[in-house]
Figure 1 (tube, rainbow, N blue to C red):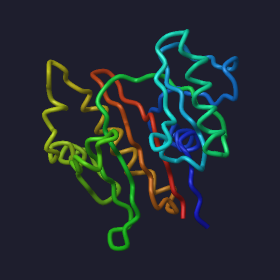
Figure 2: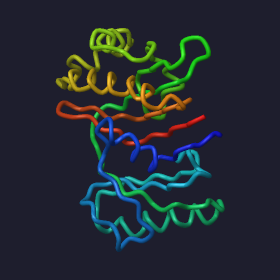
Figure 3: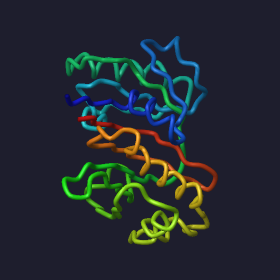
Length: 206
């Protein structure tokens, strides 16, 4: 039977394997414990792609919290979304990357990696390997991208490539334990000079 994990459930699942941005699920503003800046996101099985419903707010000032929360609540009511709650998540700075697992009829599980964020489908800069991968495969996947300069020193920034390789290997190993995964989308995984965190995810079990 097909099961879909929305962002909150997916990140809870992934936190056993890879670093995930700190988050909490709340029903009202008073429950928020995270420090600013943070991101507010609608969590609903009716809105798995939150940007399609304008369901994300970046909050940097104390004065914006109430307004942003209220806007998301209004969107959920107007669109009649069955709301699990509003996710409050640490704001992570860095480059947007995509990682994913797909179950292929020929190769079984494959891992995809590339440039992420909302422009993923337009840029189409990705690399694919059969799961699981090793460190050599991970290095090749990074270096196959047209945007590889991004990782090795671009505009004075050098991303934490060693951490990225370890994360890619870990993600590629998830289907060993969870063979029923048909799709796993991490978009984005945000990587900077020091660390990297999953900030949005979706998993389909089938």
